[in-house]
Figure 1 (spheres, rainbow, N blue to C red):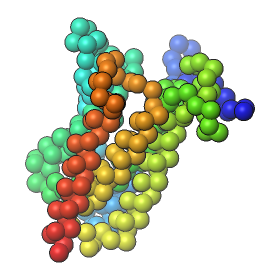
Figure 2: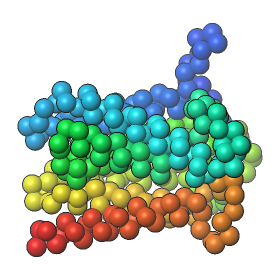
Figure 3: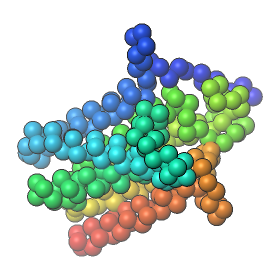
Length: 259
């Protein structure tokens, strides 16, 4: 069986010794797309759009700091405990989506506390473009030929020549298009039902859908952590479970309030 061969250069543009990476372009696109979506939400709900500038700063810091620390301590704790200064070497790569999620949740809590906003209301709205953010980031991983899947003989297998010559599950694409579908679905629910939904429902639905997809895709993804758990589940799956539980809890609580 012939498989699609992927050998893209991670560098999009070069200006002498300065390189612009596809991952960076897609990461920036993810952030800016999320900002534009939130501007649309604020206009829909007659909120102050200019206040999003400050919110934007909180979210970016939460994503970057949370994702970096998440990678360091969830996936390579031994290395970073031995080389703590390497934690700051973000340019060398290493961001974890679970850590980024925790970082944003904490950043939004601090923002809401300072500016006296309803925490669950804001989480419901920010959750929607966060799914779109996940799509762009995973496409960036695809351009880097990273976060790949296990070898496979299925028709979906892709040969990542920067890694080896084995056809593998393109788990970056599995996740990317799952997240894009979730973004479209959440947007639809928001447009059709926003006025009827209790605070916390959309965020709970986001957590349930995103981390269900992540949990299932982990079964065909190569091991990312530098240690073995020995329990049949990956680190990514274990980290997804608390988010899944929280998602179900928020949905149930929102439905009880509605009743």
